[in-house]
Structure formats: structure tokens, C-alpha cells
Image: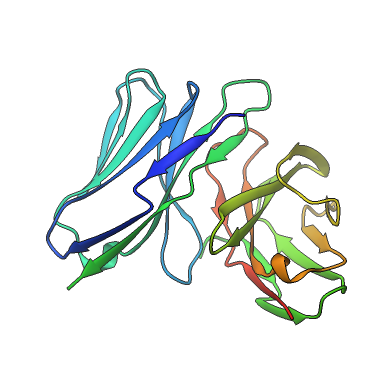
Length: 112
Length: 113
């Protein structure tokens, strides 16, 4: 079945370093969403990308959707301790069921 | 605060028992989703309801069932509990059945002893 793979599974960075997580789908997606879950918290919606090649920015976060709409990335510039958490991507199936397919997440730890 | 409420916050029970988890969606949202999150499995989609009817099914076990009531709140019933059912159970809601943004509740932590 359709899968969304997310890498890396874990990432440890020093505060101030950059961080990138990648999301790859086995099939073309209609859109992709990114969520952040802080430790002990619940997933919180960050952004949705719809168009091929789309790039969106939220302060230090940059989100990209691939030209083929099969991959996406989240890049954080100059990480801060507040960036700690697990980042999930979730791709929307363009087929009849239009289910959201979730990646397993990338857990980010930031050393102060 | 997402506007989605879940009760109880914590639940401790024994194997073989049955529990019910409750979720109230955000005001105006018609769709409710249930997810299971355990340490090694990430977020597993269980089931979706829209305006009282089942809309999509994920990896939900036969021992589990859910429903959405006329007032749009939803309940997830877990029966014949096993140790492996210990997890965080999240409810999320969205405006309609195909709306893209899901708003998650704080979750119910279930511990099966």
C-alpha cells in the first residue's frame, strides 16, 4: 500500500545548527501537511503544501514540496531549544479515499 | 488549546477489561479521527467518522470500535485489552470529511497492567 517514509528517525543537534527532515511518498500526493509534537504534547498543525515545487516559510522554518509531489522537506535554520519535538509529515492520498498517510516522524533533540 | 477535549486523561486497567475513551471535537467540526501512538509505532490512524457515519478505516483491531453521536462527540471502545494496547490515544477533528487540517486533543494515556 501507499507509504510515507520519513528520515531521519532521530536527530541530535547543537543549538544554532541547522536541521532538515525529509518525507518521501511511494505515490504522488495531492498535498502534504507538517505537524509538530512537543514532548508530552499532542501533534499541532504547522503547514500545508499543495502545489508542485511550493516553498513556504515560517520564521526559521522552510517547507518544500517536490516537483513530482512525492517528497517534501522541513528545514530549520539555527535551531533553538524550543524546536525540540517530533516532526511528522502527512500526505493526502489523491485517490477516492483521500486518506492522510502519516510518516513515523523525526524526533529532534537540541543541546543548549 | 486546540478546542478538542478528551477524557479521561489517564486510564489504568487490567488485561481483559474494556474501556471507553471520549472525545468532543472543536465547535463546528463534523469529522473526528482516532489515532493510537505507542513508542515504537508512531501515529497509527484507527478510524474516522463524519457527521455520525464511519468515513475511513485504518489499522483498527476488531476488539476496538468507535461511534460518533448526534451531538458529534465520539467514543472509542477498547475491549479484551492486552498489554500491547498500552498507548496514547489521540482524537482529532476537522471541519469536514476532506478538510485538510486536523486539530488534535490532548490524548488519553492508557496503561494496561
